[in-house]
Length: 130
Image (cartoon, rainbow, N blue to C red; front, side, top):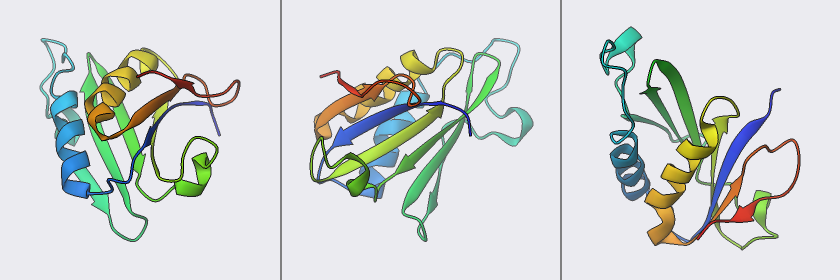
């Protein structure tokens, strides 16, 4: 496994539609290279896939020319119990501008609760960003 950039939101809101809507709107703000279509290689930019068996969301999107995936776990409360009782975890590969992207996603979810950024989950601890 590689390292990831993680985002954590301490919140009791686990409403899939609210979270998916907020994150989709944030993804639509990410610039796509002018020579690329937002639908390149089958990526429907920003539309989420909900996996009910694992209570997760997955977003495939284009960042410039890079193809990225944001993974959101809605039922990971025990992973961050040191920060709060209820949480949402977001995971993005730690490369390119992953920190800036995660800050965008945390900003989108900040109305739901306190947000923490873990720039590289292989080292250090999450830092509160709002």
